[in-house]
Length: 115
Image (cartoon, rainbow, N blue to C red; front, side, top):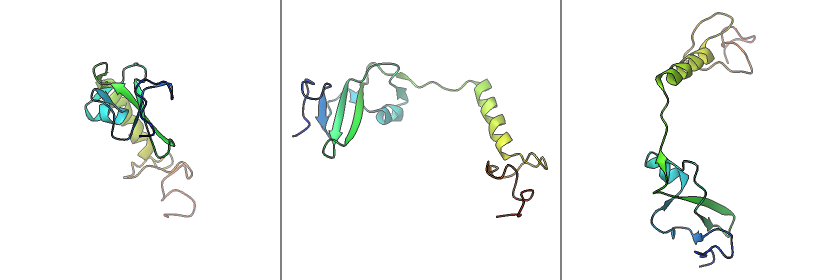
């Protein structure tokens, strides 16, 4: 096993080959699947594969904290922003699609018509 270095002497961090990480460590994606986030903790280890060209950092699950959720005010602000992206500034119509920034207006108002 080329990338097996649990002490971190060779790579600076405890390093494991693909699919050989010990229990209690997880990647960001694995934490997200459990509704967790690293919460400011440092990287605990890493996984290397594809001749060292690919790397995934591992975090301790016991130090992970729950994901934050948006407040009702933040959700309302997001909804307003998304509505603004669908509203044509020329005709003030709310479109079922997001207005292209390159056009700046809906397909009906844009020069050249619908595309």
